[in-house]
Length: 290
Length: 241
Image (cartoon, rainbow over all chains, first blue to last red; front, side, top):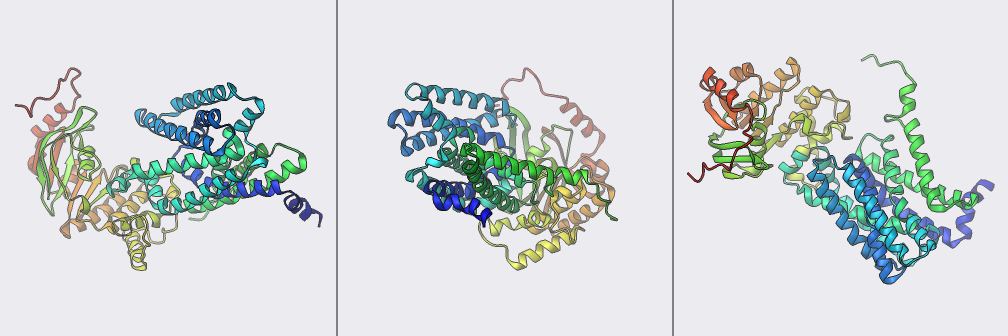
C-alpha cells in the first residue's frame, strides 16, 4: 500500500533514518515528563536557560577535543550544573521573580558559547552545535541518549511522589521532611542530562523542543500529572516520527521539522484539547442542570 | 508538650516573633490572635519545623505534628484529584515509595465523606470552591491522625456553613485529647470556641485563659506594638543583659 510505503519505506531503506528515530525515541520517552514537571513548577523558561547555558561548556569541550561526544558532554554537564545552581540562587534572591535575570543569563551564555566556538571552528561546526544533526548521530551519541533516557525513567519512578507533593504543597512537603531541596536538585540534574542528550540531535537552540512542546501540549489532554506525562510522551514520539518523515519527503532540515511538528501538535491541542481548549470554550454547550 | 523558651524567629534580621516564652499543654485548644505581621504564621511554621529559630529554644514533637497551611500557600490549580490530596495524609507510613493499602484508601474515602465531600474523590482540586478545597485539606488532617494539629487561618474567606462544619471537626479533635493550635482573626469565634488564647504582636502580649487575654488593655497594647518596626533599630541586646 502506498501510504504504508511512504511511512515505512524510508526507515526500511536508510540506516541513518533508523538511527535518528531510535535516538528521538529515547529522547521522547524521558524528556517530556520532565517538561511536564517544569511546566507545573512554572519553570518552562528554565529549560531554555539550561539549554543555552550548556553552550559555553560544550564550546570548551570542543576547543579541547574537537567534535567528541565525551568531551563536549563533560563540558556541557559542568556548565549546565553551574547554570542550574546559578538560576536557583537567582530565583531565591528575587523571590520567584527571576525571569529577567534568567533571560540575561542565557543571552550571555549563548553569546559566550558562539564566540568560543568561532575562535576555532567554521560555520559548519557552528551550525552543527547550534542546530544539531539528528541524521548524523554516531554510536557514542546514541548510547548517551539511551543511557540518559533509562536513567531518567528510573529516577522519575523513584522521585515521582516527592516531586508532585513539592509542586502542589511545598509546606506539607517540608513538614513531612521530604527533603524537597535534594529532590529538586536531582530533578534539575536530570533536566541538564536530558538537555545534553537532546543537544546531540537538535542542537542547543532547539534541545528543549522535544521537552517543553509536548509537555505544554499534553496539558490540554489530561487532568492529572500521570496522564499529562503519558500524553506528552505520545506526542513526542509522534512528532519525532512525523518530523523525520516530513524532512525526508519534503527535503526539510530534520531537527526543525521535528520541533515544528511538535509545535503543530501544541496548536492542535490548544484549539481542540478537551482541557482548557479554545474549541471547548467557543462551542457553548448547554450548561448542566446541577 | 510544645515549649517555647525565649524564642525569637526572624525574617532576615527582622524579628517576627521576639523573645516569647510559654507552652501549649497536651490536649489544649489554643487560638493565636494578633494583628497582621504579628508573627502568628511564622510561629506556627516554626513549631512544624519549617522555620529555624534565631534564638531561644523550641521543643516540639516534630513527628506527631500535622499542619494546615494557609490556602494561599497551596497551588490550587495543580492537576491532582481530591482523593490523591487526602491520600497524602498517609505519608508518614507510605512515604515516597510504598503503596497505599486498601484499608488506607478506605480511610481516605471515609475522611472525604466526613468533611461532606462524598463522591468527590476523582474531582480535580482546580474545580473546587475555596470552601470545598479547605474541606479537602481538613480530610487530609483527619487521615494524618496526628496528636498535634496546627491550623493556619483555617476559616478565612469561608461561608458560615463551612465554618460550622469544620469547627465541629476541631471540637472533635479537642474531645479526642489532641493538641490543637489555630491562627484566627474572628474574636467572637475565639471567645466562643477556644479555651486558651495567645495574643501575639511579635512579643507575647498575653497568654492564658481566653477571657483574660481578650481584655481591652491587652488588645490596645497589641495594636500599639504592631504599628511597625523601627527604621533605626539596632541589634537586640536583651539576651546580653
